[in-house]
Image (cartoon, rainbow, N blue to C red; front, side, top):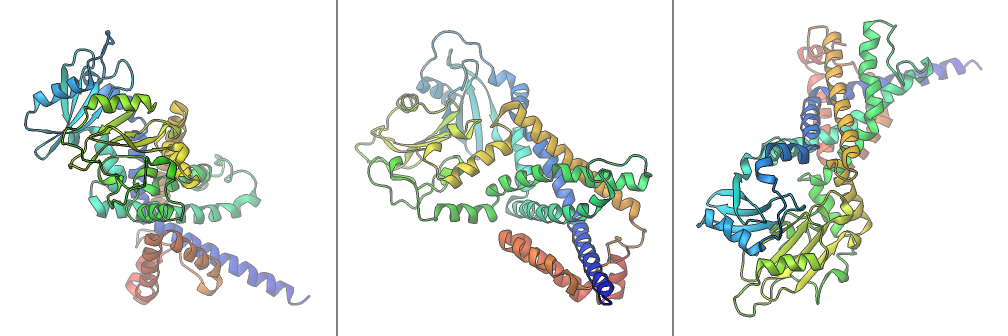
Length: 456
């Protein structure tokens, strides 16, 4: 009996040490990566409404009046080529509705252009340089901060560390549950400004944590490091692509479909078949469009032109719903379907990722999906801003005001968790190890740095 109070005291001390450790790393993760999460949330919120925004911005290019029969796809392409005689045609996209223009992609020197064509009159309606399209800029900021590979790695780091923020934040939120629902399920309005500031950060963070984690996990497959390794793992599970997608033997080409066309995630590593050269007269784009109609490919598809004598036409459908995705390779000389890869052919992992991507983009369930994702993005913005405001109010003005860490030996569960996260997210694991070593070997041993970083 006499040892019980000491045991309870030791247990309480361990919980306090773990709490301080989690608070410290939650603080560091937020201070470093919250600005990037803010950028991702703002750009993501805007990009959710890409269809509506582009329809408004480019209405003169997009909108046509339905009037009788459409001219052939070949005539539409020829009209665009006449505007730019020295350009090379790379893709054709029929309008997905009777009131939507067709698009012809051209490579004109160093510029990638989109020429819009009225499918009823065959007349061009103007052109856009793809680098000048506003939503493409938003997507580039969202995906790589307009900084190429370096930006991609930063975005991946921020997303991975956001998982640390969510996990540590939930633990910091949980101990307050014994104080009643206030401050846990809803902010307390009558406990003073200090409590309200804390609740304005913690309570919304709890409510959006699941949605935020979902957006992170469905966005990571696009990342350059984690996403590439995950995609390779998914491709090399031993199952490969089902034989049913091939007409004849599967190709031995080492060219992947993502190298020649923009296709759904599940088809990016699909090997590209080769055309059987029988003479040098490719089939018409009209034949390819007709084949797409016969295969009942979703109307959002694009046709990518072959760029080598043995290349293929590639049909790629990026529809709002994942279930309508399709990637089709067609022999450029015979018009034969060489591969037809659709959602029903995906393995369970491919289907899961495809659904996650359309949910992430806000297209799977239309406006409801957009509004729900917008709510999560707005919640992230609120949590980041309120967290920064909370830090400003608590910061003593000398250094950054980081929480002091107690005995590391009492925080073993935290380090086990970090090892697991490091294995799941290698970039986060490497950066976490570097940060831990800097903290252990430099910050804690230099008095000036110790005062600067450990004021609280």
